[in-house]
Length: 392
Figure 1 (cartoon, rainbow, N blue to C red):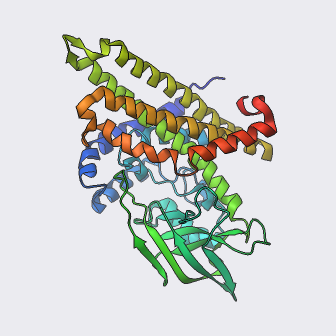
Figure 2 (cartoon, helix red, strand yellow):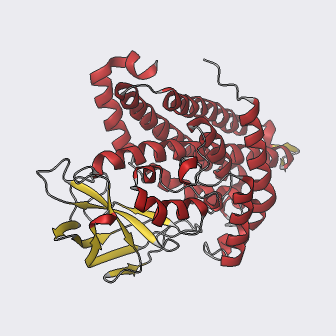
Figure 3 (tube, helix red, strand yellow):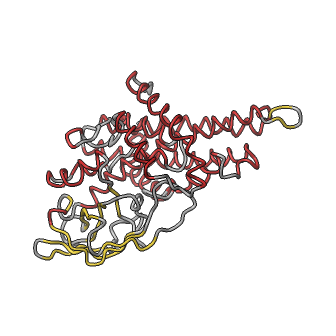
């Protein structure tokens, strides 16, 4: 199977890489020392430049304001976004792919503005007692005439501190569909409250606040797709996010290997560069080998999604996405650990790229389905489809 990039994808990669290196990397240490804060004016300036390049809203159709890149093109873009710390790559805003299921009214009120960057969306699934199993939600939505009343709390709402509306997953009638339904809620609606903004190991430009929804009343027009269809739509979101997380881990690992290699070739100890010592060579060799393997898996997943023709094809891609996320996230964590060791004391300083990635990459093995959950998905798919059904 040939994974050589087309001329168009190479041009996309170089355009994105140039922007990341020229505009975003110089901000890393400043943002890190400010514990993730990026000045709002600077953020708007950078987002305007990204929009001018046509690299925003890459997962959404052009008909609703997106740029509608193929999955393979999105992986190319996200790989470059992943090479910068502090989630500065998130400035290439990509509203959730599931927003394409919105009603015509919702498209005009929420999706098109989000695709254009005039509104910001976030996605709320996780709760105190519901994470990897979103079918067991305590947050409820109860029909009341032409309205719905939402009650509950959501944790780890990524980008909830910069968003102005949320797609929230709620438990509805267990006898209808999968018992879960999605709703769109304005974050300034009565009864919506950001109750805590926890501190995390990383310092990203977007936070993960906790939100309370206290008898929040919304019209049925804000119901997202069918009643009881929440889990199936969220699975589509997980499929996309897992693939893009894997892609970002590729960029992070590449950056770490490049910087650690350069340092090793210039760091002289006992009369010669440490790059000449076999234990350093082992760390670098293992890292680049694992990166190559992860890259092949991730691009294979994206290409399989672009070529999918049937429901069975999509189910196979779900398994491939689980394998790509599992391997790429754990690979990137191993690479970060080795890079810290190569940099030595410098690798333990916040101004060093290895130290930042060492903290930032750890969550990749947790969110959008932990490594343990990916293994469960893979194992069950193996039981059903056999080895060749997963690897061909």
